[in-house]
Image 1 (cartoon, each protein chain N blue to C red):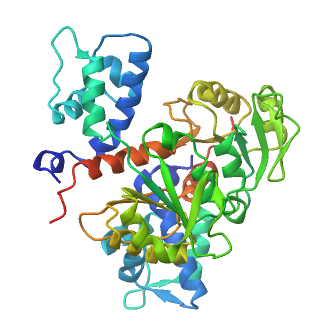
Image 2: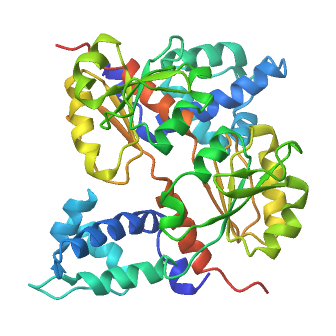
Length: 214
Length: 214
């Protein structure tokens, strides 16, 4: 990672897509400049945090004027690597993998799903929402050949680590894990995790401990 | 919320489902006791954090023996409100909503999807993976009648706040938002957010700033 990128806190990186979305809305509304207060309100954080986060990108705005919306949007897109496409492979062609292949937001936001993989030979050769399913044995060869940047794991928990190892061996630099288990990747590979049932369990905790309606 | 629950930090609550999963694995392997070190390793955190987290539940383990696995699993399930089902409603019967209705993990982990809602009258009356689709105009009446505990928002961004307001009006205490926008709910209602494309954008940042392979 570049020195500068290395010094941007993880929590700031996680907020950049939220700012990006707010900026895109402002562009749609033909608004040319935005204050940190307005951007903070749109993103659901406080204004001091917005100024601090944007300062990591070298953006300081103009006193009394604010930030130039279009330039900030461009700068943020470039920073997030969104000025070009990142080909995505989904491993696991079950319910969740198929749902993700069908999730319009991916292609539309620069993450085209270019391949799927499954361990079940009966599924190999089929197309899921237009995307061809290959066998997981071919991950290393094909993911490298297709220039996959991001691998999405939508397999059962028991298969997830093996799939992650194969993606890493293929040179895939980023892994998004939907399997409900802890997996590890070597340093230099990025890993994010989404556990849908875990989100429900967290909500369930708060639901269980709610005050009875008064 | 009960006084005790109110004092459990959010970050601890977010780790409870992770411990729960590890404990379930230990039960499957017929292991009777577990050290904080082993549980920490399985959950991907450090042992001091495990001891601190479990102390919030009133669990301290026995020196030299560790924690009783079955008892801790029971205690954690009860704490998370997983000893009974939480009926779930999914609003938005598009690709993502249908995918979520089809996500086996929900029912299996005590979150049966009992209703779907959509603003498109052409979809009303259809079944999506067995779940009947109602009109969003009927959320307030039906969600209350069906005793919905958790509402999942899988609509376009523009509809999300209105849907959240309806769920809240129906007395739904927890909302899981998949729509790519910031929504607000009154105090006392729990809100969690999952943005799939945002996860990819975060990965894209790290991918963009990777060192070239050496």
